[in-house]
Image (cartoon, rainbow, N blue to C red; front, side, top):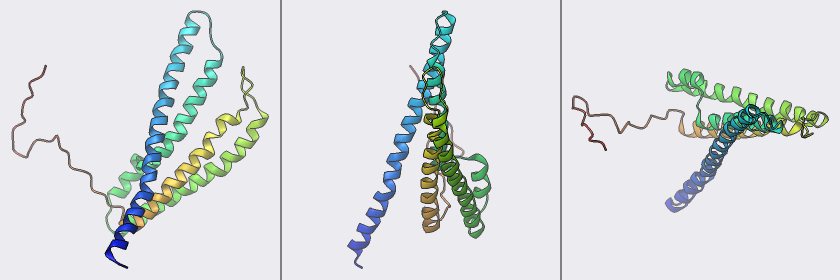
Amino acid sequence: MSIADKLVLQRQHHLKWRSFDRLELILMMLCGILCFGFSLSVMCDIVTRTIGHPWLWLQEVTSTLFIYAIFIGAAVATRRNDHLYLTAVSEALHGTPRLVVEIVIRVVVLGVAFCLIGFGYINFLRGFGSFRLPSGTPIASLYAAIPLAGVLIALFTVEQLVNGIRNGFDHPEPPEEDLPPAGGSVPTRVGL
């Protein structure tokens, strides 16, 4: 295989995972919109109740936005490896012990993702027998977030496993650019 072929394969591999970067960005923006909508709907619910004309359907909207934000946020946190306790254990190790711990952690997360998919789908199907009031919407519309999050968590966990086994799980933190030089003075900023 020539050097050019290797570069093309590396670029294809890099582009393949970049699509997950785009997916993560879209999910982050969606979480922001959901959290904003949740906050807005709670505020509107409080205002309408205070003035004596409550909009009862706002509680449905609020719970839907909250549930979807939680489950989509969990998927994004999985992609970013943003779980304090799990990362603290693995980051304290190096070499083979870290590789083993990282793989075990990801296998456990993958098991949880499969439970979310399986049991979430069962709840989703059963949710067509119960309805939310006052709209009469099947409660399955809420339960759909559970298997969706499970699929995303599984996808991101497999990506982490593949990348970690290929490239290692040790990723040094980027240097802080705002820190002053060692032993130097901190420059003062003149403001507005």
